[in-house]
Length: 340
Image 1 (tube, helix red, strand yellow):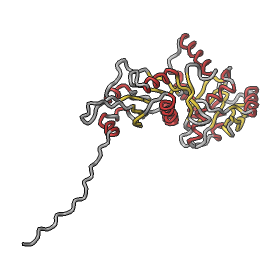
Image 2 (cartoon, helix red, strand yellow; image 1 turned 180 degrees about the vertical axis):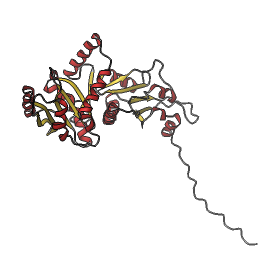
Image 3 (spheres, one colour; image 1 turned 90 degrees about the vertical axis):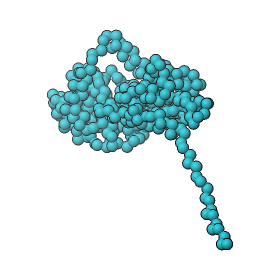
Image 4 (cartoon, helix red, strand yellow; image 1 turned 120 degrees about the horizontal axis):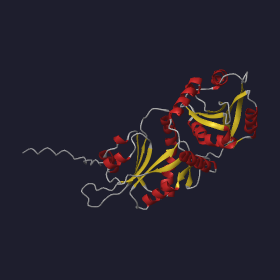
């Protein structure tokens, strides 16, 4: 996602100060007047003070439970020495959440990604304690090491993102100031659906690291029924799913073929799940707009469901073909028979 917000001169100046002095432990950054602006330099009382002590003394007092913040910290003894933290608490205002999530890549890119060894997305104050950073390190250490080929491919992708979200994508807009790249393959699949070609199924996911919308591979045998569709949708990851539901109803020999949209977001634990639950709802309107206005998809019905298993053919048919109650007209009571 790209927000159109840039780093201010004041931020660039204070970031230079942070880089140039080991007595500077960190820098707090916010968004104000459509710019990334510095809030405060965190100055350590001694260059030999431990990271944990600096966190407790300098960072913890600055963390608020309902206010988003960017945090740059001197974390490592050798270059690149910095970590960039995006802190977006669940109780922060919705627009603030959207802005901070949209601009976190811009912060690192504009200050120079070569200065940062790690980036962290946090939603609770506990994650920003010494124990929280240790937990993050332990989790990262459990990830499988990359092969040289995978590392090289990652560097290529990272370089493409640095150059502007890479090639093979098109920006779709959330607002006048915000856009997010959607892959060309995703748009092409939607255009096929809009033209009543292809498999009749398009599933999209959001890469929350690069913040791009990508096409999810469809099963080799495309679903033709609602139960088959349910089996195609991930039970653990959020999805935007477009499905052309070809069916007959009410004894008619003519098939109906409406396009249905399903937003599914299974309840799973963890920080990634919290981030998904923040980002996917923000993207839903933009994805629908891209499908309808860019790709020519006419969506008949929209469904928002937590677990794909909740989708049933009966519930879909009830939405598509609601029963119309026939109201009987008022009938006057019969006149009493005349007396003989």
